[in-house]
Image 1: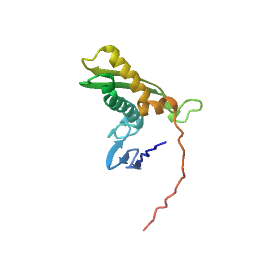
Image 2: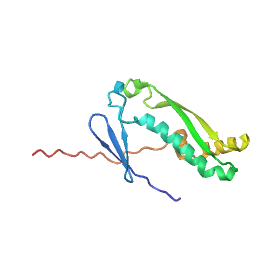
Image 3: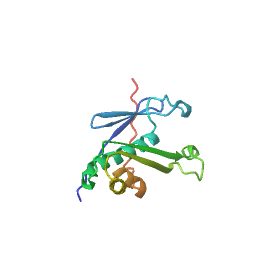
Length: 151
């Protein structure tokens, strides 16, 4: 099995704002003001929805030639439901997204049946979609406590 390991470093940037860094590309995560943030970036749930849509578009564009589909433009509408009580620690309430719904929009002259076949292939092969629908083991390797050096 050929594995490729992807790595990110995610750091606190004050308050609840966070910066993710992967291969030198940076992204800011934050929460809207009504949830205690400064509204300087998407929150992690919104980012997850965006990663699903982005992955679907990339997957479609990579595999479209096999289906004889020329994609002139594409976008995905993605939405998900989250019960904030789970994040707040209310017993018995799931802390994750309960359901994700999406609509893929294709601008193309290709026949509808070919586009629908491509869309099925996108659902089958999109790594983010596959991860969300089949689950993945998330393993804590260790916890490191860094001591502040006071001068």
